[in-house]
Length: 183
Ligand code: HQG
Image 1 (cartoon, rainbow, N blue to C red):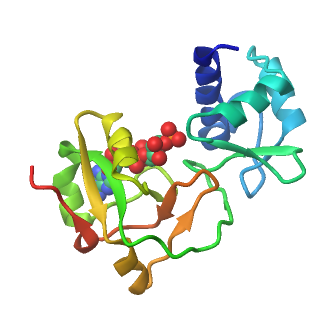
Image 2: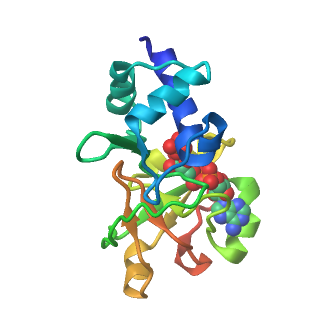
Image 3: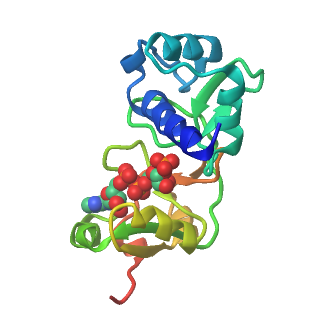
């Protein structure tokens, strides 16, 4: 299939595997996985037929590698970004010296006071490059990139996790660990 089709399927799978599996009658296991067979059957039953080959393509060619199969290939899950309760079971990892977070100016007053909070998701999402953070912020308007003093946070006892697709996750970034650009 062409790129726009894969993109549309990726968005549909994000909705089902991160936020609303019940939309097509599915439940995820505690680690966020669903059996591939059940996913394909549920998609077909809800007017969104996907072949196994196309699913494989969505997983492999996705720009952010948002989805991953289990080691045995029988199950699939989203690698990050959930709003429903799942335990992705990533182990804590020492972060690089700095990480980045892309946001917009409208969020800055609140962020200056309470730091970065997870909003509707499970974690605060951080990027390893300023360029990637800029893309994340740009989804909402003119992007503002904040620098996170991640290594200092880790030294202070904050845990960092890295998802299978390279997104850094943490619970909360207090304002003291943020470097704001001079606007
Ligand atoms: C902001 C996409 C007010 C935060 C991306 C952001 C990412 C605050 C928004 C992933 C705040 C939350 C996550 C505070 C943070 N007060 N606003 N205290 N703290 N915010 O979408 O990081 O395409 O939940 O700056 O690429 O934008 O879905 O998080 O603007 O990796 O795979 O509240 O989602 O990946 O928005 O994006 P989000 P995010 P996917």
